[in-house]
Image (cartoon, rainbow, N blue to C red; front, side, top):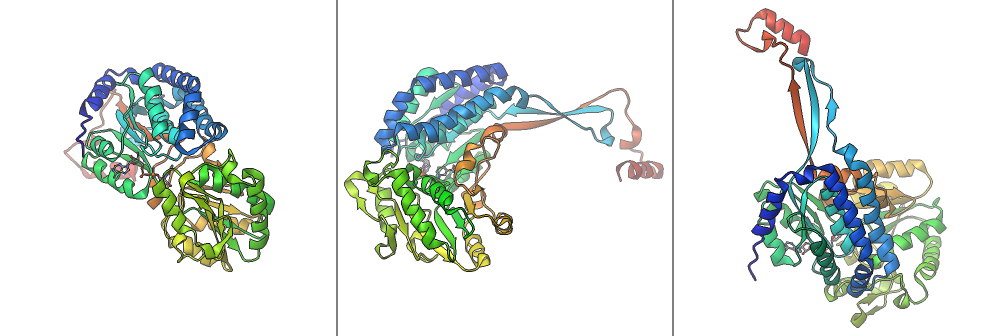
Length: 459
Ligand code: NAD
């Protein structure tokens, strides 16, 4: 394994950070504006690269990656001035007279490690949040989406100084070397297993981490749901990006009596949204590599296929596939699917279904389709999950006012909008004291009178 050493890359960023230039809000705004125009100017290159990586078309690249990045940049440009201001808070009685305030300050030199499935969004969105908060950033995109990684390196490294933001490409050896360095924050997106490696390495440096991980995200569908809408939204959410979405509905939990009708609608919607021949559809991307293709192919139990099930190895193509009569013991339920396979599990008792989810690692997302508020609220109250939606799926991540992140095995920390700004910010507390007088109560000699006074004032 080649030996990499990125110490110099981190040191030049630290030196630049220490000039305090990035603490200047107008510098941050101008850099975000520049980033936006650089990305816009290179949209064609980005489209071509992601198509080469897994046949993702330009419409989807815009809808699910670039538009989200632009929206986030605009939101920061609009708000960072206000979010960077000192926050005045009340002073406690023991410290009067004084002012108390919180200074939001950037953390320093940060590292963003991205995943391949939304190669631009998952690297650039955290980078944008780090820039907005006034940090310098090293970005390590995923080596699995190599063409997109190359393009990001070109766009960023040709247009920005390496002492401010820099893309370092590579796989495990490069990431391992980066993780030996001292950062002020590491923001990692990817699998739970690698998340553990990142957290261990960060612990050595006492470096705080955000871990955006995965997991099996359930979708409950009740009999009273609007099944046409539910099917349309579920089909889009499950099969967009070929099912390679961290918050895709992993499996369906269906109230007894809803399955046949829902399945009919789902089949109709697959044809309507993706087409009769998904292999020719611009709305259906390929599996990222042979390893994932073989992993997914093994999860398709032919006996349980009620739709799709076909695969073409040389195309890395797996049909949109629905599995019926699935149980929690089946292979497909033992790991996050992360591909275009949708298992259906029926339940009689909602308590039983909730228990199955609660007995599994906490999901990144959860969705409920139905009208009965008792059922919806019971699920929202009883199951811990990262974030989710009622009568929709995935779309919660498009709202910059909602924090995006997991809980437990699905991750720690969050970003998007103000939450991203806060993630890359230290809130420094300051008590700014008057010198007008200094009460003697704090100091010895102590007396019963002072004790009485202390109890009266502080309780
Ligand atoms: P991955 O963990 O294999 O790779 C992610 C990053 O980690 C890459 O940059 C890779 O180079 C690096 N990496 C891989 N192995 C490493 C090692 N041994 N040491 C150090 N670094 C290493 O993840 P993936 O396969 O790219 O992504 C799939 C997973 O990510 C799924 O579980 C999915 O749900 C999750 N995911 C989560 C989110 C989210 O926002 N929560 C988004 C996308 C994907």
